[in-house]
Length: 256
Image (cartoon, rainbow, N blue to C red; front, side):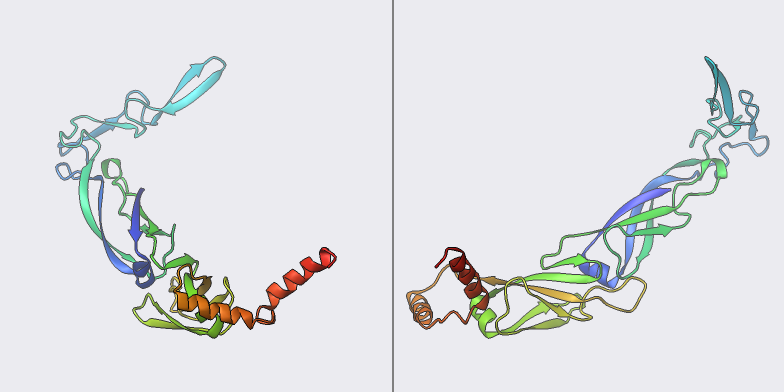
């Protein structure tokens, strides 16, 4: 069997693709057609060392140890006239191109089996399989948890206070409008049903989650600072009930 690691973008994982890959592996020797020798008859003879068993025994102290035959390498046969191209193995290293269909919805670590596309067996034995392991490239906006897409969305404190909308690019090319309710708190998650990843082997889709991160302004003009100062003078504490409750508990603990 062979292993091939394939890296995909999140968009390719969402839609699926026909991937062209190149593998370098043992393939059937073209010169001897996998027989291991060039003679038409009596190509292979029974190994004289193991008598065709492919294994030999040796005494080691009180124990009898069995191991692969060093002469025929476990095959039980030896090639009388080995092929010059493959040295009697019936296979040779070859580079080949394959087209593999990657289904939509594959995730990090997904394994895809392609039967019979592994290395060729010794002297005409069956070929192994090719296993393709999927790896996903880092996306500039989304992280993925199963079929759920998560986007960390920084918003201004005015948008968080007054509400608004943000637009996110969907993996299907469509724009996704996320409505931000007035008074949203940093860390809150807004879920858009059916806008996430494709479900593997299904027509369904997961959800998209916009995780709100309220950003406090670090650079303000003199006019903006003045407006905020005027707003602070009008504050009663009821605007931020969580903060008011927290400092009330502190005051009670300090006895005042």
